[in-house]
Length: 119
Length: 107
Image (cartoon, rainbow over all chains, first blue to last red; front, side, top):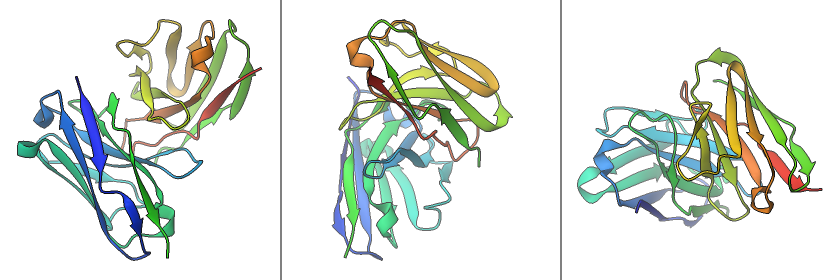
């Protein structure tokens, strides 16, 4: 069965960096776009970024472009989100999600990892 | 960016009711519209993709429709497990923006 497990969240000071990981299993990882979506405490969902199966294509929300970098290692069935220059408004639960062969919809999600940016 | 606006923001209904909620886009696009259900403390779950396609394993009481700028999620007969927050998302253009959500509560 499809499983996505995020890790790497935690408390970080403003301006700091953090790298999130998502370990995937139960499907052919390289065939799928993968996405990061976040949810600030008590707020709605915000699409953050995605990456194509071949890593050819990436896209970012305006709010994170230039600070966050999405990557993947298909040999390790893993997705990553490198987050730099973190701000208080980046505080959220970060979900990874499998997003189809064309990135059109996210059918499986991980349980999320909490990132807290605070001094 | 394409802005997605959901209405209503909250909705009270009873078990057995038929419920409809809407999602309006700031510009027209094709059928790349998804609906998700989220319960407190849980990850969202995909209900509907491509505006009207039912995700595998989702009960048939859920249905989606619409095109252009206006999309609808309908629950034909509410069950106790359906009380949750529902989000629409466009996947026509990045960033794949979400609506602000509709919270469905028990009357």
